[in-house]
Image 1 (cartoon, rainbow, N blue to C red):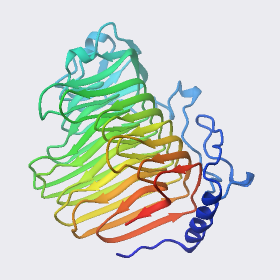
Image 2 (spheres, rainbow, N blue to C red; image 1 turned 30 degrees about the vertical axis):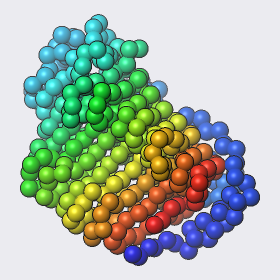
Image 3 (cartoon, rainbow, N blue to C red; image 1 turned 90 degrees about the vertical axis):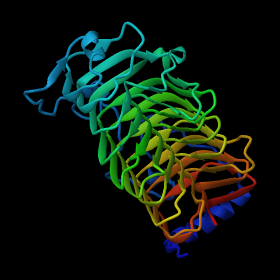
Image 4 (spheres, rainbow, N blue to C red; image 1 turned 180 degrees about the vertical axis):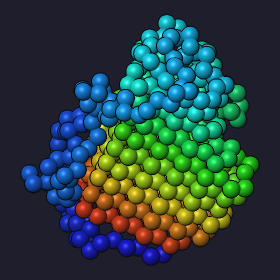
Length: 436
């Protein structure tokens, strides 16, 4: 196994390890929401963010990051003006435009089987709630999607009752997201979420089986029963201010992603750009991440994850893997697998904790764990550049300032460059980055 880490990072790790041995806990700096990074010229060693504009909601755009009315509306667009019209969208295809804010007067029934574009034009849907007693396995503004979808320029303000997905059916997972509860591409498919935000409580529950929750997307599965599938998930200029809770996997933006086990060849690309989550994220019996919860690949697959100009600000807690930005990536592959994870100009603030009943638990300031279950040919490139951790990282077993656990069979390149951490690391085994 080959590892490439720049010389200055090696020196930084050695110096930082010596500091940690003398000072086990360092007081965290105070960072206001949307304020971005601590200015390195004030004495903080590491990342340089000169000229970099971090994402923030803008008052001139009524809480959106970009102008929500910049896009041209096609002449054949379908305009939504009333609650009744909004509730009638299910099983629809086309370009839908929201012409005004809508306040829902009753429990929401999530939109099902939609293909096309939903353009909020800077308007909001308010008091959206789904009750646990309604037994909706997939919940959100949209329930279950299996084709191309673009959601843009929309705000969803969840009501005080929250949005809860619940299932009591054995071997039938529940999934909830502020915008999309469950996405499964049956063939090549694209999800784009652009210039959106969600506020409020998001919860997934299940009596017996897996359950997933994400601030924007609950779960996204790449294809089923297809020989070749390409799935592209793009989140940009979007944010959540939420409490996100699940049993199996929870993420501030995306709760769960996996390539389906029946696939022969898959390529999944997840791009998160200029986005953030100000959320407390909890997985009571699994994996939690500030932006992405659990992601995995199976068989002959390529997985590309890019996070740039993003941050998580909140407490992240799970019982197994916990990460400031990504909870975990796990390879379940018996075949060839290529992994490319790039994190740049990004940071995590808050407490990152893994405390539970599992015999081994992992926590990392950026990524909780990157592991492979089988000794198969895997090519991995992981880059963490110009990024920052201001967290207390705690686990029962393994904790790392950047990565809690890194265990990959095959050829890998790991680059941690121009990045730094301020905070305490506490576990039975403590390092900046754990390698096996």
